[in-house]
Length: 170
Image (cartoon, rainbow, N blue to C red):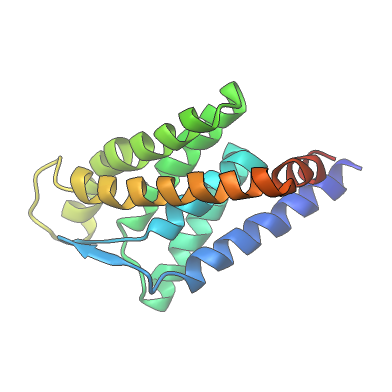
């Protein structure tokens, strides 16, 4: 029975990664980074329905595919993965959606923004200050967190939220 639940979670993580990749043309260029609000929406959904480890795996796969397709940058790795991990842990610990949205914003903009600096300097050859990516990442993740809040509210109102939580937990 445990394998069945893991297969369901893996399939959902794959679908969320696919949504993020397909929606990657919906980006906002800000400075040296491209901001993808849909990535942050799926990070929150992964946190709520799958947990932090599937969320970070989904964010990694999404970033990898986007980079291979030329629709993302190396900065996608620290930003999306920090946000996914932190909001996944926050939801796992508190079950509070508002805290999960804030954790996505903080994880991506502050932690991911700071971790993007060595990637930009060391791997991309960009000259930048350590805080350079925090504001662009904040803009992206704030928009994605708002989208996630609206989407989850619609799921709750329709009754799909509870059904999806039950399906994943079985």
